[in-house]
Length: 400
Image (cartoon, rainbow, N blue to C red; front, side, top):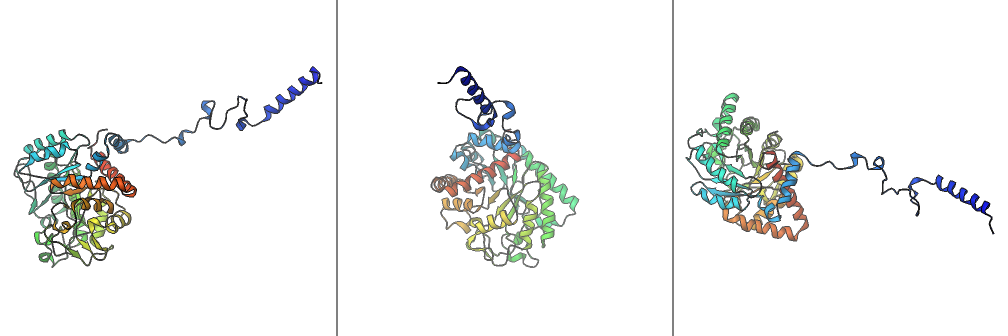
């Protein structure tokens, strides 16, 4: 039997031993904190360990994503054609949440009249604002020709201008497009047509759509156009990657167009890469021709080797890749419409352009079906949606 004195002695000794244990021991029955339950602000995780809230374009993208269900996200990946003699048809497309509208054909309408239409379209868009696009190159490829728009010379003639003259012309072009509510120009052409082969190059050289016969000449002139458009908030599009300067057939009207020459180190490929790195953040349009030395099995628009391996990985382009027409073009007509959209996105594309607007719904449905069945493809769609929305945020087409 212990005496009271001995019990007090043992109690004091136990108190001393407990006082020497580490604070992180977390013994049951003690008031000492464990590592996962800080007891004071001084023991909270350091600020550097807490992820910072997104800001700028990233925050705008996250806010937009929070308002879009999967269908709405996928529809952001489509740009649909609207005939210039049926502009009211764009209202329903805008209201359905399509990513953009493309003015197809020729118009002699004044800038103010077009602005009234494009403003209405923007007001109907239920989510992010629309890309409103046109083919405004010059020569025989000039969509908008009415009051307020300069009559533009061919690209070949533009390339022959002095830099200051071309810069002034590009600035006026950007201003007129902006005044009409156009924020995306499917120009300039970056294809290089070797001198002496122009007449046999059906899509480009036969119409003087090239800025010159060397990559250096094309790059200098096309860069001036990109900058002139950007000065007025109009995004340029470099086309048609990896180049249509060496083909004979026109992919819009001819199936099986093939380039047997262009390789990854070609000068026109390098010109695309240099221009794509512009601070103006231009889009890149993919060609629908087949390139034997890059991927003989697939048109460039459906080729991971071309769009991902060459453009994104080798040339380092992170931005928007828009297709050439995947609606009416003969080069892709043998492929079912839905599969065209799926294959383009799977290859590394971002925006599907279809001049035929009736194909948007079946194309989007095919993307949604594959998205639901294939987790890897769903991740690819996620990346495309973020790329598309980031471009809109940078262009001021997202709130915030």
